[in-house]
Length: 366
Ligand code: BMA
Image (cartoon, rainbow, N blue to C red; front, side, top):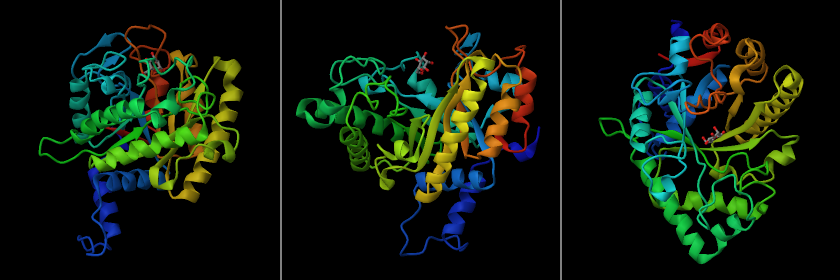
C-alpha cells in the first residue's frame, strides 16, 4: 500500500485548525471557534492545494455489481485494495420519513457506514434526489414546472418543505462518532440544476425561486443548529462562467464549487467528454479561486467502464491538468447489470483502476 495516498483527515484537520490560530493551539478570544464544517473545508482545501484529489464512489460499501448489503465489502476495495477516500450517499426519501432511500439503502446502515468512513480518515458526501412536497413526484418528473415556485412561496407547500428540511437537519445532526463528536460531511442539494431533467432544473424554475430554495434551506439548518454541513453547489457541464454563476445562491451559502460531467458513447464520445470536462473544470477552478471556495468534480464516470484504460488514460490526465479536491463516480448497482462506474474484480478495466488508485495524486483510504 502506498502510505502517501492514504488520508488521515484528523491530521490535516488539526493542522488547518492550528494554522488558523497561529499555531498556539488555542482559538484567539476574538475569533469564533472553528465548527466541524470549518475543519472539513480546511482539510478539503489543503488536499486541493497539494495538487491531490480524493477519489469517491457512490453507495460504495453497501452494495456492488453482484452483491448487496454484505458487511465489509466494496467493489473499490476488492479491485484496488483500498476503500475510496470519499463515500457518496443519497438522502432521497428521508424527507418522507422513510427508513430506506430511493435506491433501497437503509438509512441506519448508511449512518453506520458514514461513521466507519470517518473512523478510517475518509470523507462523506450526500446528494438529495427528493420527492416533491407538492405531489410526491420523483426528482425526474418534470411535468409540473410550478413545484419550486410553490415550495418557496405557497404557504402550505412551503410549510411541508420546511418540515422536510427539519428531517434532514435532524439526520445531519445525528451523525456522530461513538465518542459523541459530530462528523462533518458535504451536502450537495439541488444538483445539476443547469440541466432540464430535474424539477429544480433551469428549464423548470426561475432563477429567483431556485436561489430561494437554497436560502430557505440554510435558514432552517441554521435555526436547527446544524454546524457539521459543508455546502456544495454543483452544476452539470457548463459553457461559460455566466452560466455557472447564473443560479449561484451566494458566497455565504456555498463552500464547494463543483460540476457533474459524464462520459457518454465510449470512444466516439471521448473528445466531447474531454472537452466538456476541461472547460467545466477550468471554469470551476477559476471561480472557486476567486470566491475562496473548494473546487470539486462532483460526479463523473463512464457507465460499464467500457474503455479498459479509462481511469488512468482519460480521467487521471484530466485531473492532473485541472486539479480539484475530490472526484466522485456513481454507483455500481446490484439490480441493473450494466449500471456501474467502478470495475469489479475480474473486469477488464480492474488492473487499470488499481493503477489509477495507486497514483501519487489520488487519495484513498486504507
Ligand atoms: C441515477 C441512477 C438511478 C438512481 C439515482 C439516484 O443516476 O443511478 O438508478 O436511482 O441515480 O441514486
